[in-house]
Image 1 (cartoon, rainbow, N blue to C red):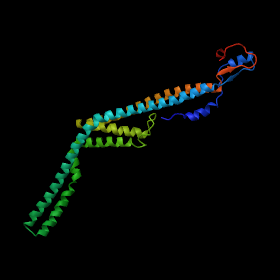
Image 2 (cartoon, rainbow, N blue to C red; image 1 turned 90 degrees about the vertical axis):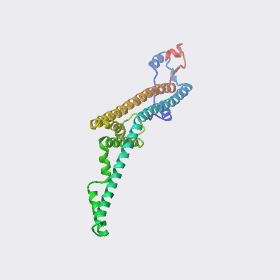
Image 3 (cartoon, rainbow, N blue to C red; image 1 turned 30 degrees about the vertical axis):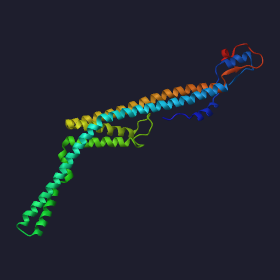
Image 4 (tube, rainbow, N blue to C red; image 1 turned 180 degrees about the horizontal axis):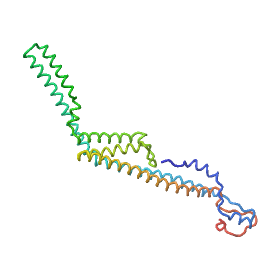
Amino acid sequence: MGRKNIKRNKKQYTRYQVMPSSYSTTESQYNPNSYYAGDPLAHQNAIKKMENQEIVHDQQDEVQKAGFAAEEKTVNSLTMPGMMTKAGASLKTLNSARAGFNAAKVAKTTMQGAAVTNTATTAKGVELGLSGGLNGAKGGTALGAGWKALGHAGKANLIGTAASFVGQGLKKTKWGNDGDDTTYKTGEITADVLQYGGQGAAWGSYLGPWGTAIGAVVGSAYGLWKGFRNRRKARKLKGDQDTTMKRLESKAMKAEDGKFLVSRGNDTGRPVAQAY
């Protein structure tokens, strides 16, 4: 969250000529030689307050960022372990089905070769065996057989888990996280939808197709709500910080440009505090 540079602000103060009030004109009626003089010490103290306030603001930003990160970490700690367990089971089923498909294909080839060997030459058996294996492969692939064996729940779980990891990965890039909490851009929206929508779909998949759809919608809605809420919080904090800095800047400029009334010649007798 960027803010004005203190050194730049110091230079800007001299650009403003702050007239404290209408007392300048009123006082000049009594004493035409009156004028306003700055207070260097008060000005330096005001600048120091601004610098200290910048440190406070930086600390506030860090606390806010830590809070956002802690919330996301908590959500992941509640959802990811179960998802990973189920994804592991799905992968085991997929690999078992693939292995079974390959074993069946080899067995078919071997049986065809053996049958031909009893009635013809070995060379002929090998030829027909290879042909049988190729024909068997036309019916599908090992990966296809494994994917089919997963069923809806296993497929949706793997897809949802993968989407969640993609979303988390995007947040490690500048496109998925620009580092400014006061904005919520397309990349950040996409990352949240993938991460939380994927988690919702994975958990809802065990309730069937409708469960998958509802889980994806609920998860995506949560991600979007969280993103826009965080942006709103960050903007409010920045607004409060800017208001504080403007107040301190105003005090610094008044101290530099003329806070106290000084009279030359005949004094009216009015205290300076009353004249301002």
